Image 1 (spheres, one colour):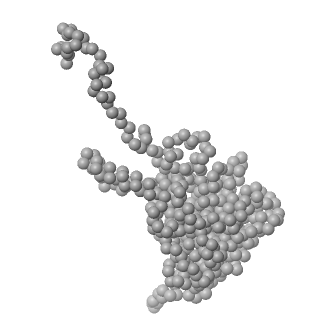
Image 2 (spheres, one colour):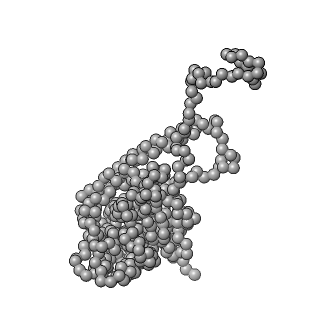
Image 3 (cartoon, one colour):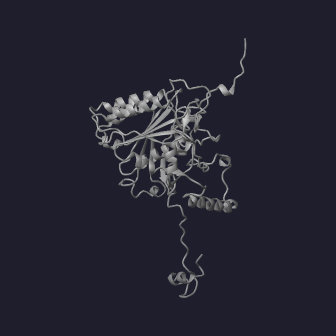
Length: 413
């Protein structure tokens, strides 16, 4: 037998802003939200489709789509966006951008946590925990945010699928960045990354036109994995965002065109270095529940956002002060394995639990484990006793056997 030494230079290089799954070795890219990455197993696998069911009264699903595209811009990926309800160029110009410092909107939360920790330390002398619970792991409701990423330097080109210049400055691209919702993406970044707008011409079948544009984008920019790459070249990742698909603005010939579109889209992405995030107004099809269920079987992952805004059920609930809505996970991506990777790797949904909620602060969006607030409120409610003078005035006269008015009864004990 003869052995050959493995040459690292001849091994295929990972695309910028990506990593391999620790569970099944699948190539992953970040959605831009650390908590959402944790739920689906560390990130969105390349070659899959993530479906987000929109909320009736809010635009949280559109916010998650913006996170997905903004992370692609920061990681040097090629982004493509299609929308019929809003201008795609306007959505791209309103993307959030990187946070420049660790201070964010959650300073109040950190201060409250610090105060509670100091209070618990002060009461440590009086309160003791049972020995059987002393060494248990601390319960965490969320995923820790990453440190702010440095601003990416301009490059000569980042849109090519061969990725020759995606890491031309020698610095690795971030996998998941920390974004600030109060900041918009600079115009220079849009000009440098050159995102593609999948504009559908007015026709009878928008789904067929969009699918053809995606197919041309994959083939012409060398994103197809069926075509071998040149030696010593690095592949780049294609991110496809589709906003509010199947809304009344999308024209089709028959009701089966949408099913054909998802079936063909997943087939294209399976043999390409690309991933797609699609938002759909599922509430428009409440009277036909099987319509959305059939779509869920044709995609790889399905999540749903349900806001408390405009809800009569959750309007006066005490937990609305801590959360802004529920976050449901209907389907997780399963590739090259029998079980989804989140069953072992996730912090929020390990073991298949689905008790999740989200909150939107001024600068960030986060998904956490849902829990009810303490009974009676967070703060302690105490009533001080009335002054001694009032007690003496209100104290009735005690007259018993052998007692005289104004004196203490000697038989009282």
